[in-house]
Length: 175
Length: 163
Image (cartoon, rainbow over all chains, first blue to last red; front, side, top):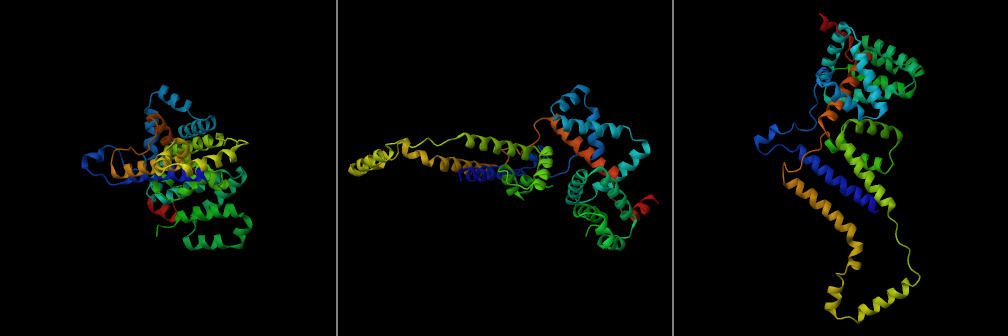
């Protein structure tokens, strides 16, 4: 009983601190101290550029602090990013610009769905990528019809259907 | 996922996670979020420390003559004058059960203090600039990996943008 009592009290303190952080500033001078929480960080390209602007020892120190699995993933992704051709980078930059124009909630939905996608077996990931590329070329009504079709239900399990439905929703204009 | 601390929504998730009552799917989502969010990580670590401390706490076994001594004390209390009873109740032994309530009251006071003193308590941020850089580059790379595999722009818009 005490555990839950303490837990709730501790949560109340943390939430109060969070609320405080979100409160509008009282004096204009306070504005410069810290950007309010919830504002998205720098855009993808800027974040990567800043990373490479750090001294190699600093980067090394930062990576050394991470769990091995997390470190490996970041290093692999950096390598992959560096190996892109200029055209691929340009295309990716374009996609990122479009993605950044989505409302933050939709961006978070996409990230969550993609995390779920990454947990699927690699062969199924390939199938889903193909299906999504196909859905992407369709007009919205056709896309909806395809997702509601028996063929779609037969071909994909519930988890895969949820992923495709969620990603397909992101293609629709914001209501 | 939207930060439960930042948005003040789904705060119960954090408590359920700390109590290991969260289902595996939500646990995975929350843990992925904690990888990026120092505030949630800090809360999780605090909760973990609290749980471990409580796990280590064991009530002492009741002694064999507990009942006999208790009744004797009750008898003594009844024979005391009214002022001895009032001031006698301030002894540490009597206060011990009230300690958890007092601790909670302190926490509530801290929360109240925070809410009436703007700007005095900093919002949780990344521990150091390097950690923040790692988090930002990791998030950026995750986004780019997603966008490398999936173009989230409908083809109709795609055509119009290339014209």
